[in-house]
Length: 202
Image (cartoon, rainbow, N blue to C red; front, side):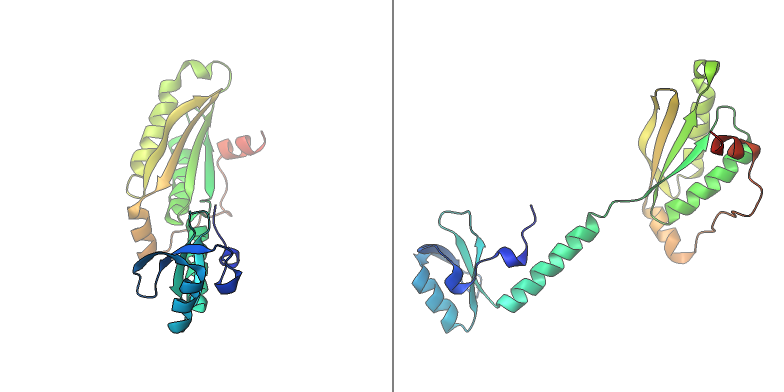
């Protein structure tokens, strides 16, 4: 669990009678009384901060508390940024899709990958189409091959009920390409393939 800078006890707020002290030079001074630790911090013109309250005895550092809180807050902010959920976009196809329709979808997928998004490719089967999965698997294989310069297969093709799924994630190539060229947005004004309209109606 992330500890907020407001959760640290400072100076006289520290309750322990003895602490393990790390001084202002980063040297481990061993276990000392709280009064001795406070004296050392005061002599250095710094603060005594309890950084590991659950240790026995608690660990305290002699630091500039203002600088300490700034650096901790910065690390917390960077950690939250790193944990930011990557958006997943989705393209939907049907078995025996036309080359034109697949190209239309692949172009959209490339744009999303260049933006740092993941892409889920979904092929839905109807009736006896499920008896011939090899055609759909070939479609996914070709899509992955066309996008291999900007992505890698994060989730290999697998069935979930009557749906075949594959997930592509952006690779280093996508990041480099995004730096040198702005991905073309899919033209939402152009006429959508009939298959696209059929899927939207479902």
